[in-house]
Length: 457
Image (cartoon, rainbow, N blue to C red; front, top):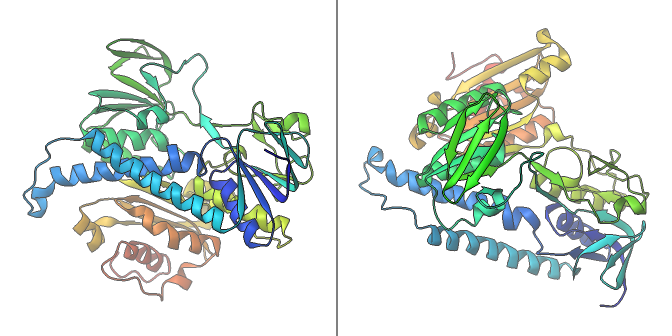
């Protein structure tokens, strides 16, 4: 492969990398994007898309089990794992092909191979030097483990969990964050027994506490066990399963242990520090404009400390392309990036929790309203329980929106506009939410905080 030169070189073809490449191309730049595996990265091939396909298959299984409640006679004969795999991989393949076509149509040159940063303007790929006036680092993340916890055999990460060819009888899940509760939801729907181990006091511990407690109640009803506030100590495995020991002496026997304790930045041995890019615990340190310590080199996505979400990576990729083009794009802080956990029930949020709002503004300056989905006709039709909570500054804008319930993630689009545009509940109250929709739950919360509740007391 010959040496090549571009206006912009992007190292990594995942969510952040390809977003930067596409937007830069739109803005008239020549772009070379280096990817050692497949464009689309973890999200498309091993994360967001395949796991949500599994969750939808799980939803279908539950719908068959519960069909009699809706007057439909159906039976669930079982889960055809091979069939689910065909469905999942088919979706990924279509999205991958579509992305490849889009990159080609936008004249983005995709360079296959492992890249290594060698200076502020050069990346080495094999024997070739790829030169860019600017460089974007977007190398993604990997599944973390705990010190002394060796992965392998029956101790697996989400990547291996996706490729299982059978439904285990019982699974222990280490970590009650997004990845852990999503896989727990899938496996329970597929017929497995599941126990989640979380060292912090709640499941999805970074969310509004009312959502965490709501998810815990829902999982208890579903028969998903969890042990909260208890740390993992050790695990042994043999041909028949694993035995997990907790610090309080309790033991859990299972077929598998899923390690879901978060993801680490993939930045080692890529030449970053040698070229002059500063790292902090493996993350690239950047300023508010996402430029690293090496002028002209930017970083986006999971290698930048903060939320590790594909749509945050998209936003940062677009931001950097526009920044390089001199458009001075608006900064979106992590707290105002939508967060969705696609479990059953779903958990979704954007903005400050009530506790964080009180910490920032004081108790007397914060108001909130929690609207139960029991008062929402569409939620009743869907057979879901939950709530939508809106947090505002007293006589001021909405600071956060938090919800739990089936399909509640679909509400977060409106919620993020309200939060990011600093709208007041009084601004939203006059506008109409279609009936019957779950969006009405948001409307009811805004009406209540505006002092004119309709279906709420």
